[in-house]
Length: 209
Image 1: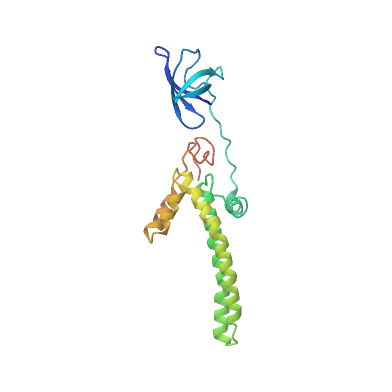
Image 2: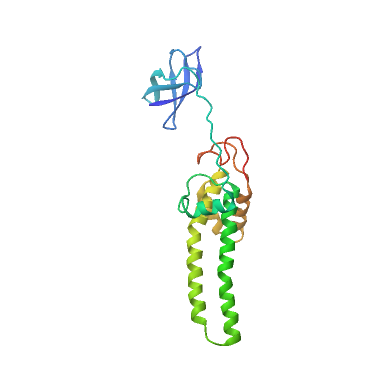
């Protein structure tokens, strides 16, 4: 097992290790160079760390996360429909979420316009073009349901970006209150630090839109 020294008291030899298995192990050792931050190899025995061996000569260097490039409104929308279509892992900055919401709205509105035109033409000419209207409604329905999955996924990633569980998206099913909750979360800024879902979209310590 390997891990990182969290604390160490050289007077008593007692310390604490954060293991790579995400568990913490107490230890007692007089091994040299056990100050916090050093990587060590150890054996787990009775829920304690024994037989410690230092793997590094110094503390871990700070983790540097390269900033994610700004893809622009259309770029984020395309990514949501391609590589991120069924991907709820990771994080999505506000700009990515609202880029998808914008183009989703525009596509659906443009899809409904021919239906309105067919209805007006049918009312004025009386030529019976209901079949065309029904066919177009089916096409619009396919477009709508095709956008549901990436919409859910980008919302889950938006929840991750502010440090919330993606399961909280289910609150959105509650009438009135749920929609308001999702809207508020969509407006929150990204967590500027790494969380359990990954690095911040704009890099460590940078605020993203």
